[in-house]
Image (tube, rainbow, N blue to C red; front, side, top):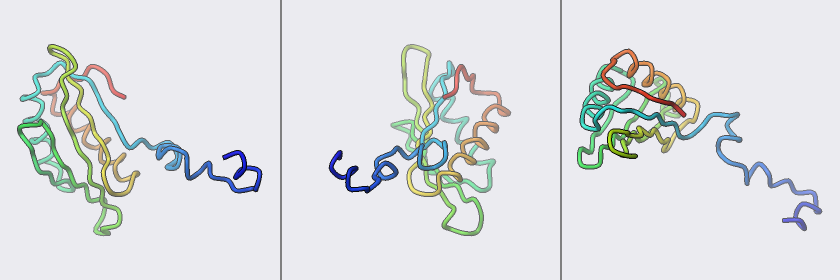
Length: 130
């Protein structure tokens, strides 16, 4: 890499993380909860049913939701992401939102909309957010 750098080629943009390339937007978000996993999974499905710009496929055995969010009628702004619930310890769970294909800014907007809807629903007790 030193030799390439001496030749004047700047590869830092290519080697930097997706977060740095997108102006600070993260491709993964999560929060901790004390709610039971089954209750959270049902609540997430209920919240997603209430958001017309999002559709999902539920995988009950793995507590995973595959979500498609449509920003506008323009299909280039759509994003696919996964919401999955993991057990950290007895009574503590992590709900992870991980971007798949699509626009990072649409993902961040969809995450914020979904997070606010979860807070408004009130059935999931959130401990911390990252």
